[in-house]
Length: 366
Image (cartoon, rainbow, N blue to C red; front, side, top):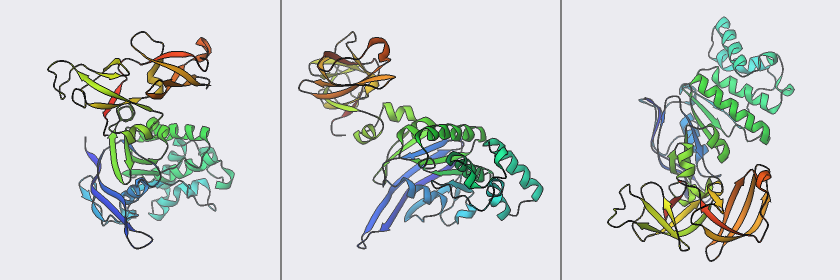
């Protein structure tokens, strides 16, 4: 599949308050295939928006290259890069109707009047705003205004569609609805898209590929399931979702090679748990277990760590427990459907074990 976007050794420095350079994006390499929706995910100040702005042409790289297909676009102005950006603030014109807001870019490009009306009407139908074409933005809800901003971008039929935290101004329920609509529309149109967010749930739910960033660098690139279930380091594991960590020791069978796809296990608190997949450490090496709450069980058959319930929260679909493992620390455990089995009592003795195939370990130094 052809690449729509390639970033090669991309770097951006700004001048700090005292004149010293501040590194915002540090040597980023990234390839985005045609039709993919790729999310840049990370905490505030990690460089994700700066990276997006370099793709759009609003910021000039200090070093490195931006390619659209095989075309190097470093020196091209934003208006000739064939991109469109959906902003956090909507950026729609308050004095223009919905129709005229969507038509604005086409009028600037002097599109034919007949073709313009057909394109705008088709896009308004796609985003569910046909009945509101003559309304002003002040008569629209936040979600409807964001649809106008999205329609104004896709009517231009760009090669790349860019999103800069487009849903952060919406309430939680509307944000969930809009991200479903954005993903559905992107898939139907097949537009290659780069989406910036700090919301892990948003990134997991809409992306083909997630790019986790920290301090200007890319920590991990992969499908959402891989990034969540198999993080490459502690930062990624800790940033995405809920997690607890336990120190353990890797144990391999006799004569096993650490690079071989052999059965391995971890020893923690005198209990041995099987480790799926190739081990990432040598026999006897300390490792850090990455434990997701939903991947742990209470009092299941098989070897478990003895613990005590220190906190029990009923959250409707799940009960969340904080369990103290003597001498090892505390872990979080989510038990689904507590309405059937009830909620454990604080102080109750339990045994904690991972669900089969869910265990993930990192070398302790990582």
